[in-house]
Length: 417
Image (cartoon, rainbow, N blue to C red; front, top):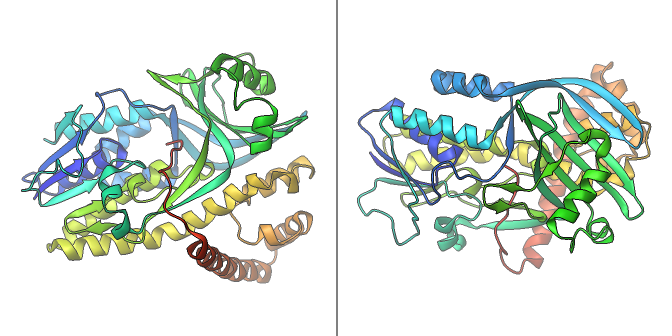
């Protein structure tokens, strides 16, 4: 096959690697509009389960990824002057720049053609390509040209967020919640290298404007955030610039598509879907998309059947992640419902924020039921049975309401990677 991947992010590069491993005779080109090494961003997260799956697909790149990642297994929450720490699953952080560097090197070693500073729009596609992969991210020009066909839908979140770096190296996945006279503001921090961490700051829109963050110059805004989170930053600065690109306050936009392929064009990664950054799944989903597409192309020689099988597999796999992301975003948008709980209970419900039951049950009651469910099998079964059914019902009603009130797809989302 002759394959052109438009976009040199994790999805496009990893797909190129897997296709070359399956058949070295494939002619595969990855086109990226930016210069090599110029990616924006700080660290990205993933979990042990992804690393195990990557080892089955390409052990060499999986070993390189693990060797360049930092690890943690604790979660720490700071609320006012109280702190609680819990043991959790093993997590990993890696710099986005380093991740792309590793994948690009592996792709080159396998014979993939990498073309940087190569802008590729809908009118620039090679006519002789058997497959064109839209891996060009949330702002995908290839998807936008055919937005009606793909059924692109965008939902904008309420809260404001900004994706920053810091020289403070967190030894655990860290949450810090700070109360101001204008409301609560919080950050998520995690290490991704020996001298750097990611720090995502979020707040309600009224807090954002009340603190003056909507109009503050960059230096003043950073100074204010450093003051608000001084206890967790330990005197380290926040960093707003990555290369020539400056961090901006944004509203997260969740992107979905009704279908993921059109003729020989297929969507992958953020071009196909986004999930709220609070579940830390973006990079994982991109790599899993690539693995699923490579597997479908191996299993189905006919391209239409392969693309249909890929879409079915990934759309089904995304359902629980998208549900978790929706409820996680809503948990933060309704933070005042939980913030005055005792710290250990608030942190426990922070860990349960993906639950479709939590918004409909008083928090103290949910906490007691959840603790009891850990001891009684009948309660565990009831929770597993009711939760997904409630999620499907609420989601169906939300979609129906959105279809009645939709006025267009809006602009494409930007988010942490």
